[in-house]
Image (cartoon, rainbow, N blue to C red; front, side, top):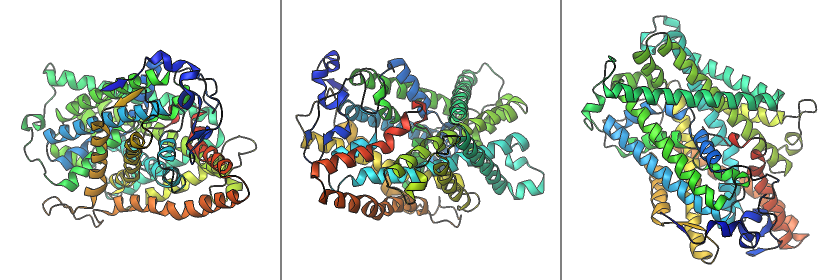
Length: 556
């Protein structure tokens, strides 16, 4: 699967890693394809981060980054769009295959350029013209769409699980006011979630990190509980009433490609986070050897847990339950398995606080991306946004920007459409840039065939990933069949269209805030100096988010 061209230990010697463990994107003159400075100590990259993370820590980090609220909130969406448990499991399996192909392909990119930075670094290196356009668009979409959209989606899940813990399934609510205003009450709780996390991030970095780390453990323990319980139920040693979903297999499968694409988006949203170890390569020991170990180990472990969790859901849940519960499917499952106290109250509350942790992590990271962008004058009102609060030493203005954007995404969609709408909207640019990164990998194979590649994946792997990305970017615009279309009043293509428009919107922003500014700078300095200055600035947009805590390179 991977070709190890040289002994891994050889690449730990400084003379063997001039363009990878030592040099970062900043020290490479991309416009000229040259290295302009000696390689620093390979134990550290030029962000100042020390390589202290071993393979076991890397596997744990991949697992922690991949497991978010998605596995608790999207299985019903996948099931309903698939039409059957059999097809739903196929979609989850395809999601695992796509994830593994992407993760292993990123291993090649990461072994070539093992500094921090992720997609931003890969896009900037692979696509030199227009000057760093794709790298800037990626950062722009992270700020204005991907992270705040994900935070808003997670906050709605938080609100619905709190309401489930308080009132049970929506179909069982007898209070007319609660039943009629359920969606807006969930949004009100989501506002409380976003606002409390924003206030916390404004007041204390230390407490923000503590909240995230604590809630991460709750999230992982809840997932383990569900997956292990599912195995016990399937084994038949309990008296829990089982549904017919698993035994029906592929009956009632939907063949609609639009729905299949949306189901795959939902599954991949749960798998997302597989790429985030590449953001923290500056802290991984011997990255060329350990990166594939961490990636394969982490992705494989999470894939097994996710498939077991879905088996647990489908062994008890009916299709009617899934259509009614949607994002709170795990709460409905807990209610049926553990009863009205632990299952209906404790499990939904545990999942709610897990969503709270995801929102906290997203708020933390995007605020720092905004901060560094402002420090490099790539944001409107940069002078104000670049300031830290004089007392709390937090990027308060950046947190407020994130909060405002998330609130807009939370309140704008019509009732009943918030979660799926936001998942589809932010997933479109996310997967577009993932795919472009692997197009860059194939392009670099042709443009720089002699560049050192300690690990090379079969070209079939990035090809599979790129084809999956093309499917995800095209078929959301294919009209659903009349049998599957639901009259929600929202055009089926709107969420994906908005995601695509954000990418296009970033082009004029790049032109005025970056291209013209660097063009003026070039007129008064050498091309190479301008290139280095811009590379250093754009690289910091992602690099600096990892200095506080690598766990906060965030899982939706």
